Length: 542
Image (cartoon, rainbow, N blue to C red; front, top):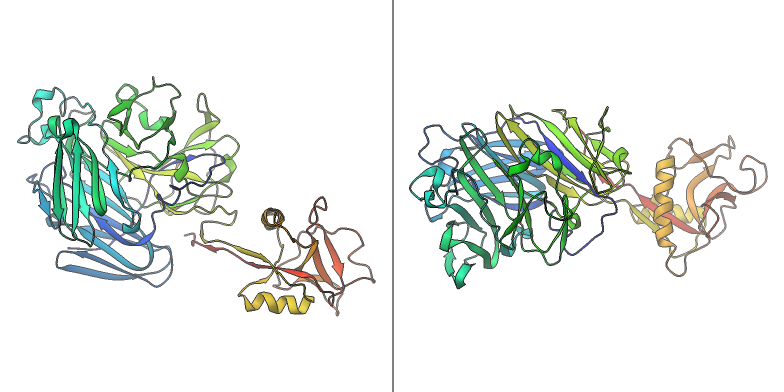
């Protein structure tokens, strides 16, 4: 069964300066149209308390129709931009210990959404970022099983018949095509399984079944974890992570120090080369690896976000009755660019991260905000939650890799220097025919941003010496104005007095090197190249 409600959140941010694009850069973007969700066994399928699993779906755009399907149940909602709907997924959708299952939940939408899955049973809570189907992979590297006293240690305690001591598991979730899945393990151990559409299968990861690679003919999702791993308070809790597809290149990770707080001696990063590293590893907390990296501490398996997969804006969903906070790691020069909702977090104390150029802080998180973004760079954001002695979390839901001082960008601004020189009036028409307008430089921030874009364009051949902007002088009042009626609060006039009686009535901007993009007044009938512009489409701030 499915139902809906409201939510709030907790996050951890990691901002890295100067992030560059790579072949992996698209992989972490979490918005899409089609998703697969599975709810693993939590504590035990026979545990007397019912699970209260949740599914958070957030629409990026208005009039988004969302359909949630599990077995014969279908539920459809139409969401507005920035609206999050919370569905309750009841116990009959949770996996037991069956080898193959059809308990795969599907989320389909007409416009882009993000999906956040949460498993809750008693005090056992885990959350997961759900990637869209088109960003799943066909090859995954499996991390080593963490050494957990009372679960995997001593080794002779591990038994499939006792919940706390059952082996770790791999769960492979298939999409819409009949699929062949191959597992490769130690000692040339292999296994092949055929999966029907929208089915999942489970494998033990222990001893001679220590699988290291998952390969599939068609894309699949892969989860790694345990239904009831021992925690710090001598109880057990669900422990799962959604694996990322095998990386193509060597990657750099930063390990957020707050994640090991109060558990430093039990915190490690699991690597897919069948090894783990801790704070004694050279370079820690900055790691350069040829593998995926999953941080383990009692009660938490957290996939770390590589530097190549940073984004500028994240949707952050939340769970009621959970301790909410944000831990931020940011380059020391970029702290001012972090935004929570529509404003920068206040009254922060930044602490240096030893051996790096990064600093960290803790910020209380408002229940009303569900967007984390940066004004000028990319960052990594981790959703985190605490309840009782349980800590859980996941990489947050990235929706944009484009930074902008105005907000979270869903579609980027457009700046185009016209290829043909035209009179000012014809330039206005030229831009409008392209669903653009002559650029309006109505604020210092926009002026700086447009100048940076023009500077990038100026590296190509044939850039004009000057261009029309949307600045005009009134023949009635002689006052200068922007044609979109924005207030004329900043200026960058160059040369002759713009208020003088002689000279032209239309504004241009210099594109010549060394001229500081100064403005000048010109005869409106001169043929000059136009700069056409369209503002970015931003995610609504609540």
